[in-house]
Amino acid sequence: MAISTKRRKGRAQPFCEINITPMVDVMLVLLVIFMVAAPMMTTGVSVDLPSSNASAIGGQDEPLSVTIASDGKIYLQKTPIELKDLQVKLRLVTKEKMDTRIFVRGDRAVDYGKVMQAVGEINAAGYNKVALITETVASAPAPANKGKP
Image: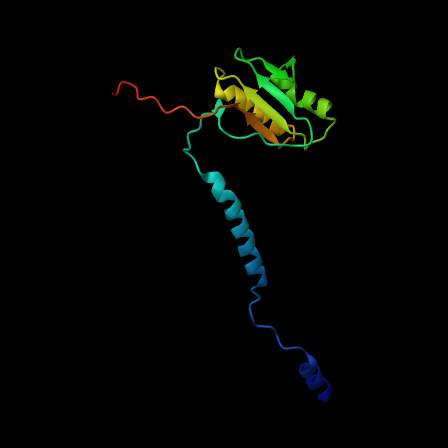
């Protein structure tokens, strides 16, 4: 009998406290997710893409240019291509270098959906450094008052 009482006394008592470290980790991850996602949820900002007062962003490498002409034709640099071939051509030209900067130039008369299709194809190919190019103007024109004196 003395042996069995020694075993019971030698065992550790059950741990009855709540370990909050995993809960704090989860909360910090959720905080980071919301901090990153909140600025992306803003909508309703009207922008005029064809003209801008923004200065050019500098870089060391030569960016590729994808152009959507007024008739809807797509060009990679100066070579006409089909939208379905854009991913393959980009990978061939960049030699699978995914950090290549790609400038998308859309004519003012082109449907915005056509420009976004091209941007979607570029992103689907794995390129994330995509910029929309606009004309630089000295000063933005004031909004016209239609029919009001």
